[in-house]
Length: 310
Image 1: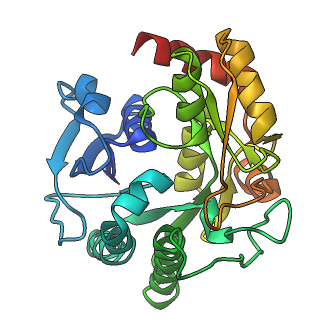
Image 2: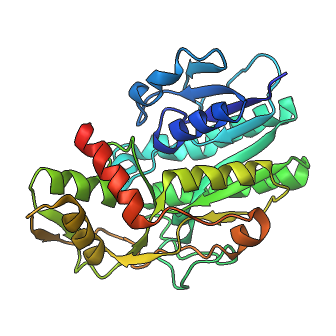
């Protein structure tokens, strides 16, 4: 009998790639999404697969899955500032009520539970790079707090279920990830810069562009998630690419790779925008034998080509 994996947010960017990857590994996949920020286009090619089941459901409401379930992967959430500032209450609810419902499902099914957490639990960090031992520097009542605190609460709830109910739980702290199937209006750096460059518009850089980011290609991220899912690790693990760029240097790289003659347009830095963001991945290297393999140049070429076609 094939093992069943429930993937919430399965029609989203990372979720849809994860569903496709798990099917290739021989799992039966139950994809749950309500299309708040995900898209049916992302999973259209999977609909004819007999091992793929789609459920249109809001996970802030109780969820029932018939039959055996072996893994519950909770990836449902607005993930870009544009989305979680547009849907602040829904973002808080999916991190609290949604996480509670899915932990309950995993407990009832005696399944492994994985939470898709985020580098945003570190806030605007005072430690660089950010290791899993860092507690973060988060403004709980700022505009970004709806996402940051939702994920911090969901981590606390996940660890409570692990300790109190002795459940096998995993927490993936996911850093910036990019690749095909990102929405062009996602609001994050890669889709913003690529779509602006391809249309000949100025690239929007916030602040003076000296803030740093790191970027992990989607195939590397999915491989890391998969290894964590099958591991015996219960503490949070950073997954991301430690190669770091200033936003200005990254903008110039996009202009070069697209051949765009666009310029740079500067805008004010958003409230509580992190000045640095770079994962310490020694834990993933040691415990999961994982590190990114796709260079940023290679990954961007694939991503730009996908945006050109779509």
